[in-house]
Image (tube, rainbow, N blue to C red; front, side):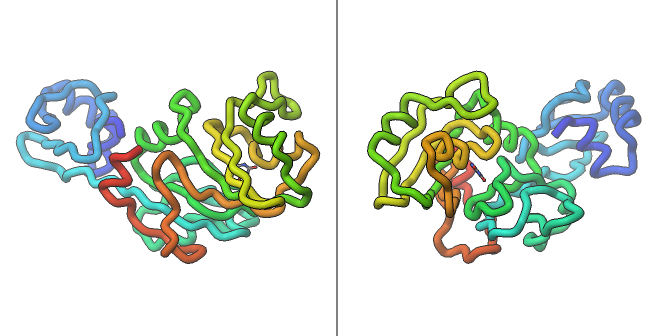
Length: 229
Ligand code: URA
């Protein structure tokens, strides 16, 4: 979070007043004077005003097992949102890292740490996402080669990046992709003349959906999971 925004969020000062305090050299982060309003406050930073700690930033990081019928949004007029499954304060500060379709289930990461969310979702980082897929038609061996070399999706200018398909049985597989195009998995199977019947995200980077989480349940990420991303 930007330093000026952080100061405004934990004091009665506005962001423009926070900028004046910064300019006046009254703010330190981890003991060092900071004058830049854009300075990025980390999850463990201690911000002090005239030498007095405001509050150690404690960002929140959760994994949720998304049920069908919920949208990955903070607010929605028509549908239930995943945020309604969280029993947390200041829900408006929490955001989803990479949306799932309303009928897709499984792993959703949620946080109020904007930089971390960006890291997980930035296309440049090519974070791996693994899905369990069931299809209407059989999945042929040729899908493996096609997905690994890239496939042109309707309305796109470039082929998909190499994706790894592992067949489980005739109509189910695990697919790992490194992009997040709109409806990507469904469109990849559609491009092969097939249709996805059931889609569940089971892994993001090295964070695996906790099998102990029932549909709709969530928990905080462990330190180990956090540092693995
Ligand atoms: N690909 C899809 O088609 N849908 C999702 O929800 C996620 C990936």
